[in-house]
Length: 127
Image (cartoon, rainbow, N blue to C red; front, side, top):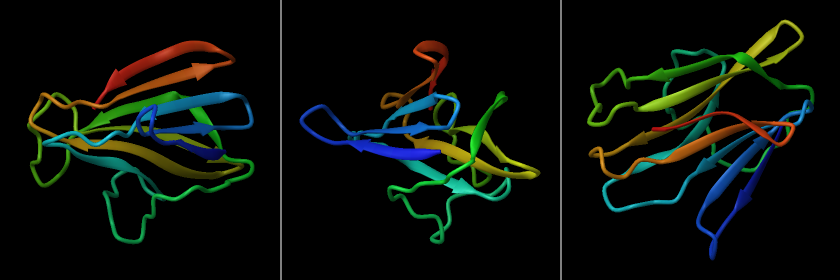
């Protein structure tokens, strides 16, 4: 999987693309009352930690498990919107990691995502 950023003047977006041409695009633009971003963790129940860095990275051989997409609530009760985060599973051989797209906001400033497989939208939502 590779991570690509697109900055202004077209807004702030990040795309995650695996070897199977599965793309997850996330609108990462900051708005007034929103705090959001993304991270990759080793466990599905891990939340944002200073050890997770938002930077361009190349993860050869890691691919999305298209059967796994969960919406999560933050364990500290930040929930002011329908969903705090969307989580996707990455697999490589017998290993797994989790891509989490998160956004804590007052219900007005949601951030959208799309899952595209070979050019066709398979799933979309917002956090």
